Image (cartoon, rainbow, N blue to C red; front, side, top):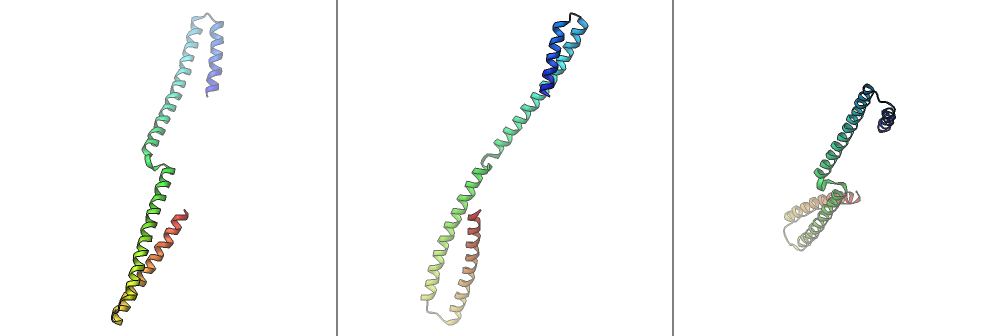
Length: 134
């Protein structure tokens, strides 16, 4: 479109130099105004797109992809640390259960609860490892 307008503008400039007819000059002037209006419209649209782009970019803030990835990596690391702390606590609880001298019923209940907790912990560990790969 710009090339077309440029070519037309050059043709009009050549006609302007060649003519002294006021009617012809008026036509050339009107055609220049049309070209100018088209150019202004194109430039205004470009500025509007640029403003919209800048607004969207500003609105994203911390949600830009690199920042978001880094944030998620930190969250996963924190979750891994908490999981590790919980595993240590659970191992201490297991040792305390082994050292405990209670009746067989309470021993079985504690063992069943520990088994349930260990299974849940194992599922979390697998989930964390999968997240870490992503």
